[in-house]
Amino acid sequence: MSSIDFSAVTFPRWEHFAHDADMGIRGFGPTPAKAFEQAALAMTAVISDPGLVRPEKKIEIELEAPKLDLLFIDWINALVFEMADKKMVFGAFSVEIGNGRLKGKAFGEAISRERHAPVVEVKGATFTELAVVEDRPGLWRAQCVIDV
Amino acid sequence: MDISRFEKISNTEWRIAPFGAMRAPGIIYATQSLLVEMDDKVFEQVTNVAMLPGIVRASYAMPDAHWGYGFPIGGVAAFDPKAGGVVSAGGVGFDVSCGVRTHLTGLSRDQIIAVQEELADALYAHVPVGVGSEGDIGLDSREMTDMLTGGAKWALERGWGRPEDLGRIEEQGCVDGADPAAVSDHAKQRQRREMGTLGSGNHYLEVQEIAEIFDEAIAASYGLARGECVVTIHCGSRGLGHQIGTEFLREMVVSSEQYGIVLPDRELACAPINSELGQRYLGAMRAAINCALANREIIGHLTRQVFAHFFRHGELPLMFDVSHNTCKLEKHDIDGEARELFVHRKGATRAFGPGHASLPEALRRSGQPVLIGGSMGAGSYVMAGIARSEQKAFSSACHGAGRRMSRHAATRTWSGRQVVDALRGEGIIVKSPSMRGVAEEAPGAYKDVRVVVDSAEASGLAKKVAYLRPLICIKG
Image 1 (cartoon, rainbow over the protein chains, first blue to last red):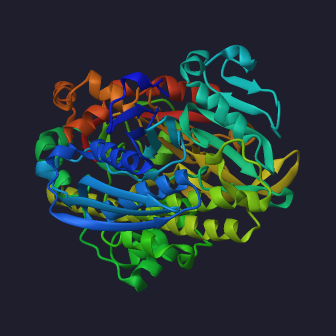
Image 2 (cartoon, each protein chain N blue to C red):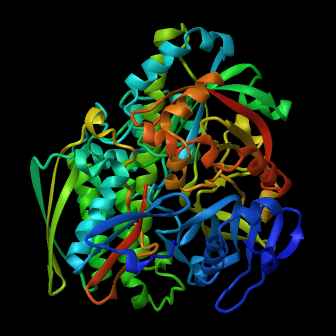
């Protein structure tokens, strides 16, 4: 895993990190919810340029998990399912988290080979490098490796 | 990788003596140079697997091993249910029963070259490939159940395939013990329109020239002749397998405490084979194996349709179809005693030696074909299972070249256009919906497959039979 220079982190933002065969996604934000939104953008960027995605359709997701990191895995996997099932790609996200529950919205459109030039489909979120942590007061990081 | 952590058994066998909670040693088969190149995570994951309950003999890694999740990719481990052995969703992976099949064409290189461009276009147009692609086959609930229990047999009954294919597929095209009821509605939903689709990432369909033969007798028994061409297809159980992997990995992570299993790493999530969860996973995983076998059978059929358009004989007999992400119940000789074990192969190919009862008559004398996928440029290999492999790693061998560079690093190093043009210069036509995808799969991002197969042969895992050089590559 690459080391992170927290002093250089401005947020919210996302990045990828290297894994031998797959891809690491990482989101930063002032709250876990914002970090989840950014990590979702990082996942979209594995597939296509998030800036190319039009927010034509909204998908709503509700989840519950006993731990924050499981909730993150469930969030990413719910998005993977929606993308696969509806043949969509998402370019914007909104997340609220409270009492172990997540209410999320994903905005996107039908995937287009011509416009999105999708690179790879995501199979699922792994527990590899899974972390949802507050690195310093007010700076949350949510990350995992996704199998592609 | 620091080789001082290993005991050198031979030039291609490296042992990790049990320490801490390890119940068995770790063994990596690789040349010193391949071992040194491996990520430290491979060492960690091989030793972690050796800590799981019921492990038999050792935790193994093949010469193409690299950092996976839980198990290394290229990992092999067998577990005894009578000794509290476990089954692990991470030990099979997300792409359940991902595998390779090779069809013979009987066509010469010149015959392919004469229509190379048109054939590449037709294959690319006819076989659904890439993110978001859908097949023409829709499955209702009843058809889904039949497919999950019938595998390639189901595909054949629907007219996709040839009867003689079944004898050339592991388990004769259909694995027993599949339980469609253990497969979630979400998994089934993901698969509704994905039958007969290739997928993306490192999945491919290639037309390859048999460029070199290493063992004439075995090659002849497989139907391989130098200068002729074959078609090789690499893909798996698509969305259904991915969803099963996702769901059971999570459930096993949450449930392991309840079974009293102390995990050195959460990703090693597993359940006792004889538990309700273990049995349910096996039922779902076997259904996913059947899905993969059906999927590859349908893609084989689509390929035959394209070839029939270009050539008078489009039979394309199937040489063999073998998976490399599975957990299978097999009988193995352990210190003179035949024991039934659950053998996990995660990015590793089964490699039964000559005489094995599961092999069709025509292959029994030569041993099982072991299909090793290489990168777009470096080519692929056909190997044969050998008797020694049984004692080496439960009759297992490598499955591919293995990455040496992350996807991120590959896209920083090459552009897709650059890769496509360079390969065209070498006479290889690449068709893909994504240029970035091509860059991520650039030949230079992979280890040298020749070194990997040489290492597998020197280790006694399998024997080299033929080298296949790509002429057309349809990439997901």
